[in-house]
Image (tube, rainbow, N blue to C red; front, side):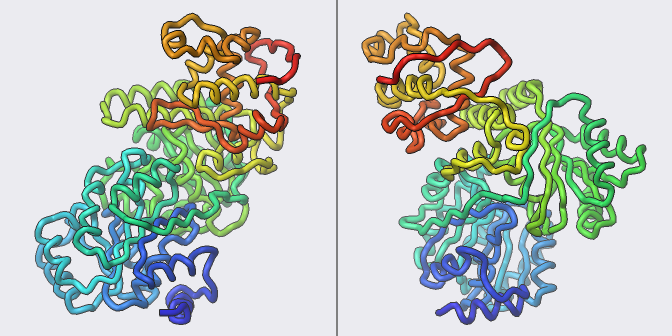
Length: 519
């Protein structure tokens, strides 16, 4: 099948005359019955990549979606466009579900959205064998991986799809997945040789800003009053905070509502609908709000509290500026947010606690960085981004730097000479010539870079290494004890004498840098 039919469907059902970057290539892969992993930022057009093939191919596309609450809205939007779509989940009566299944058997639907729980139920998994299926789409595919930011245990059983239906293409879609999560998605879904499409994560229209978490409500009120006609979302760490902030805004004459999983379904639906229709321009919400909402004119997103990972943060700020025009993102940061998240994670006793804590640490590094924030964000998603964006608070008010090439080469050389087997704490101890037992057991006291960084305190080295990490010279392997790895940019500093800058922080006095590089 060529793309002529796909282009016609795109115009007929969506009103567009051409595909966005990569959409056509992805659709072609599905037409050729090949499995695909798609990473596109929020608003990048992932759903088109499986909806158009499902509309134009013989059979029904089965879409696995994690949020029952959003299925109805997604299906209604498709129906308005003339697409034959429906959903199946536990909110429907047994009779309704049976009728829909019968209609699927008769080929009356192009797209059927199902929850993972429904898909895995014994009756439905048996019914799948009777359905004329064109493709399987796994939406929010990061949920399948323990490395992802929204792990759902039910998703880990989806590998049965490829085992039972090896000839049917699987398209896994997500807006936020680092390299480890991507590999795990492929493994968990049992995809033998998928084509991987990774769009640029850059959203140049989003301004990135971080402020200290002091007098947050007063700052938020002033922020909104400076933008009286704009629509936005305020994300909070707790249900109580959403209600508190919404009430404070209302008392100041600002139209606002709150949204969290603890309020009745009807009320949640009304808040969501009023927001989409611009009747309520501002919603204070937990992360339960926003996924799947197609509202193009959200002009700002505020995080009242620091999120627990960069994946979730990036997905949430991606709900602003989906129309491509300028939008503002504002994150309030305080160390107390870090401690709160640590307490929550330890209380939940998650089996992937180490992973969650590592991701929390990277989120904190973003919030405290003194380098271009977009550079930090995109490097986290393995996008080699080396220039400043000029659209974040750090670029607008740049800090003062000095030549940090020599300390960078010292740190990078120590990582290289220990064969990339050490984490940040061990690296600092090696550089400062620590006598700890582990260093002597591994004979790291014999390497050339042992003790070459004694002129800096442990605090200084930690700050430097975090800056090197944020500049993309290093990566962290959370699946291997948080060991530090050299990146191509880091190797350029170490082996090609590429210059490296370090920010002049005022947290402690800096030691004068001198000497020659020979590490």
